[in-house]
Image (cartoon, rainbow, N blue to C red; front, side, top):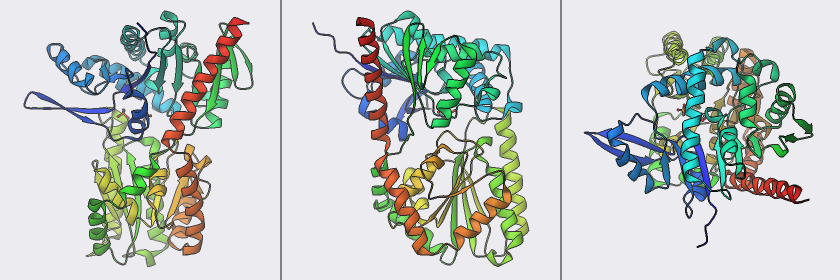
Length: 474
Ligand code: G6P
C-alpha cells in the first residue's frame, strides 16, 4: 500500500467560526485571507488543518464537534476555559503580543501564563503527532505556537517543519526582557524554514539567535544541532482577485450607491482595525482633531468612517482602550459636529466582506496608521478595491506593508502633526498624482498575492529539506 505524504497546517485558531444555537453547534468557514490562501493546501487530498475551534466545548460534546470539523479537513485541539485564560489571553496576548509590538510595559510576566503556554503547545504537539508520519510536512503559524516546532522535532526528527510568524519579530534588546527568551528561541529553531514578513524581522530573529543559542550562522542560514535552518522574509499578500471582483458584486454596488447618495459633498476617510493598542487608533483620532482645529474649513466637508472590530475584549488593556476610544470619539464629535454632520462615524462591530468592499470603494482616503504591524492587510485590500486607480492610502512606516507600498503617503504614526499634514495632503491630492501612485501599488498587490505567498513558502520549504537531505547523504 502506498502512503501519500501529507501537509498539515497548524495555527491557534481553526479557519472556522463555531457558534452554539439552542444547544446545536453551527460551523461557518472563515473568509479570512489566510484561510483562503491555505485552502489550496489543507483542502487537498488527506491534508488537514489543526487548531482551536475558538470556543469551549464540553467533553461530552467534543466527538460531535470533531466529526463536524472532519468534513472540512479540520482537526480540533480543545482548550479548557483555564487554558484560554492563561495560554491565549495570558501568555500569548499579555506577554508575547505587547513585547513583539514593542510595548514592554504592557507585559505581564506571570509564571502561570508561561506554564500554561508550554502545556498547551504540548497539547498541540500530541494532536500533531497522532496525525503525522515521517515524510509529512507541517506548517506552523504564529506567536501562539512558538514552542511547537521543537516539540514536534523531538518526537519526529525526520518531518519537514515550516514556521511563519504573522506579527513583527522585535529587536533583541526588546525580546531579552522576556524571562523565557531562550526557551522561545530554541522552540522556534525546531523548524527547517522560518518565515517573517520583512527583512527587518529576519535580521532581528538572526540577531536574537546569535545572542541566545550556541548555533553557528552564515547569512540567513543557521547550523543548529547538525541541521541547516533557513530564515527568510515572505511578505504576505491578499486575495487580490476576490477584492477586485467584489467591487462588481450586486450587493456591493447597492451599498456603494446608498453611501454615495447620502455623502455627496463629503470626502470620505476610512479606517478598519481590530480593537488593538498596536493599531494607533487614538493617535489617528488626535490627528483628525488637530486637522479640524487647524483647518475649520473642513468642517462639514470630511468624515471618517472608523470600523473597530471587537477583539480580545477579556484582556484588560483592550477593555481600557475601548473606553478611551469611546471617550475621544465622543469629545471630537461633540466639539466639531453641526446639526447635519458629524466628523466620525464610529462602529464597534464586524461587517460582511461586501459591506467592507463598498466602504473601500467609496473611501477617498484610507488611513492605516499602526504603531507596529507585522504586515497590515487592510492597506492591501483598499488598494485592490480601487479599480478606478484613484484614492489615497496613508500608511504607517511601522507596518510591514510600507516596505512594499512605498507610493502610499508614508507617515510616522507617533508624529500627530505629520499624520495631520498627510491627511491634508490626501484631501487635496490632484487626480493625476492619485492615479500614478495607485496604479503602481495595484500592480504590486496584484502580483504578490496570497497564492504566490503560499507557493513561495512551500517551494522554499521543499528546497530547504532537499538541501538538508543531500548534506546528510554526502
Ligand atoms: C493577528 C494574529 C493572528 C490572530 C489574529 C486575530 O492577525 O497574527 O494570529 O489570529 O490577529 O486575533 P485572535 O486573538 O482573535 O485570534
